[in-house]
Structures are given as C-alpha cells and as structure tokens.
Image: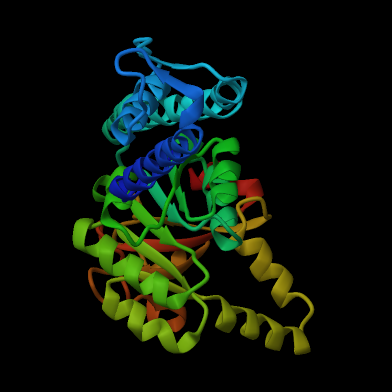
Length: 331
C-alpha cells in the first residue's frame, strides 16, 4: 500500500506543462504548413485560425470549417497530430484516475487499515535488523497482519508485503506516514534504519504522537545518549553488542553461540518476561527456577546476589530463562 503523492501540485504542474508543450508543437507545425489548410469561411488561415484548428483537432471536436487539403497536411494530421491527441487524452485520463479514483480507493483502504490496527507493532526499516525483527515477532506468535512495515525502498516494501506484513512505502520521518501506520495506537515502534540521524528524527516524530514503546538500533555507540534524549525506551547498539561477542569469543567458543541461541525464538534457550503468579508472591526470586532479573516500579533491574534480599510483589516484572523443553511451563 502506498500513500498518495506528497506534492500532487508538482505532478499536476508537470503534466499541464507537458500538455501545453504538445499543443504548442502542433500549433507551430500547423502554422508552418498553413498552406495545406483551407478555411471554408474566408479562405485565409490566420494565427487565430491555427490556434482554433489545433484545439478542435486535438480535442476531437472537428467542426469541419477548417480542413487539411494537401497530402502533407493530411500526413501531418495522421502521423503527428493523432499520436499527440491520444497522448493528451492518456495524460488527462491518467491524472483523473490517479488523483480521483485511485486516491479515493487508497484513502478507503487506509481508513480501513487505521480502524483495524490497534496494539500492533510498527517497524521502520525492513532491511537487515528490521527484517529479522519482523520474522522473530511472527515466531513469537504475533500475527503478520499486526505488523506494519515502513520503508523508503519500494523493493523492501514489496518484500514485506509478500511476507504477509502490512507495508507502507514512504519515510517514517513524516507524521502523515506514521499516522497511516497507526502509530498512536501501536504497542511498540521499532526503528531500524541505516542512519543514526534519521533514527533520531523518527523517534522525535513518533514520540510526539504516540506513547508506544520505542525501540531503536544505533550504529555509533556515542549516539545512545542522543536516542535516549529523543524519547527512545530501549536502545540496541549493534556495534557494541557485536564487539562484546567477538571479545568473548577470544576465550570461549560457546559464548557467542549461547547468545545467538538466546535471542532467537527458534533457539533452545530463550527469555520471557512475566509477573509473579499468586503462589510466587512473597517468595525470594532465587527460589524460583529460571529467574535471572527482577524490576520493581521505576527502579533499575536487580540480578545476581542483589536478588537475595528481595521478596516478590504482585506488580514486579521477572525475566526468566527458559528452554524449549519446558515451554509449556512458560506459558
């Protein structure tokens, strides 16, 4: 699905100028070959007659008061004026279709899309990390039609659409594109583009219109503070993460494999976040299998030995490590 043109006046101006140039071309040719025309009224061809004859000929009105009488004038009408006449009509019909019929259809589809979308995920950028994030969300159980992909690359938008996602071709830095994507009603907005500057602008725009959780990918670690000030809730520095994994690989050949397995839903190990059950409230997190981190209110997360003095409360958030064999317990 693509939004209507951002600057339709430019398209209309270009097409109008093209029509004027074609009419001027026909007028010039008719004036140069005015000897092959005959005026049935006064027998003379004036400049106003050429203008008049051009307009009635191109618009297929043809009153018959001015006629091409020479063989060359008739060839000009057949080989030059007729193709130009068809081209002008195609321009008019194409413009009417694009700006009236097609736009009405697109507006209706987008209205239905906005009414349907709620608590969905918006992914800005379908290349690289964005593509994998969308696929991972599907593997985690979110329907593909609850994921909206925005990308400036038409080929990427088409790939997203082929994968079953709702795809918008455009830039997420524009408010109207985010509005079409239902950002105001989204559960989360994932920003995965190839420029930290563009990422910051998308985050600023999205935060103005949505309270959704915003997750971003940064290329340069020094831009993490910028993203946080812009309003991002979670920031992933792929460079720092990759560097840490490479460093761990110097001493361990299992660390990278474990992390790769951990972050993928298709792996044998995965993380899940949940609240304590009624039977777990009042217990120590260390007494519950798989609990690796606890967050209470707006405080920072606790892990390791910091959990020894914690007693679980109903509103706490627990991060648990699970294995595919005990996925039933996680649910």
